[in-house]
Image (cartoon, rainbow, N blue to C red; front, side, top):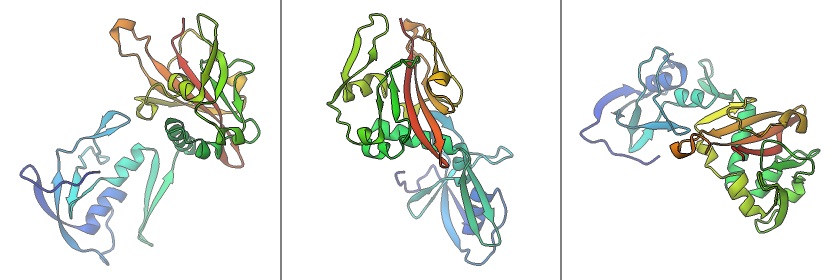
Length: 267
């Protein structure tokens, strides 16, 4: 986050560092006095925050706001509110003066990580989380065809964006989808900035079109995360929506990717 020096729009406030950390991490519980020091900081009530593209206003359980603070030319955000918004448990052990962070949704964490690998086409990192038994299957539409492109971890690691595959058939025409990896990703994997998807669901079909999904049959004993952009162009009556479903199996306590399934309105 960019630094911002205090100006006329900011109200000056002096507080004890321990108290502020308690508000951020432990919902008002007091820290031991040892190690605490008084500092001068500033409240930045004009800072706007968004989460997955939607406005987010951090607040305490009673609804009172938690504005950003500026101290020593750095911006400090309310860690508890932000972490819990992202599905991370935040606790505090007063005996050891330890802040405890723990993911409440390992599947979503892994899906978000894979999504970054797909966006930036980091095939080396992606290969490390590909199922060793199933590989990863790519499907351009909700119905996963027999013979869909399935790649082992080693093949993912060696992927070349210029390499060409037949990924299935175009809806409507039935012509083969013969595209290089880069073009396929542009059209059937990351055609939207799914990291910023306004809707995210776990094991839930957020939106479906006229193509039947056979996710359960194609990937038995798995779970999935869907990233969805609803249609927003009135000229298309909402038919310009798009979803990306990342399918995972759990092996040895780790979520591994087995499917990358694109969905949209088809002819």
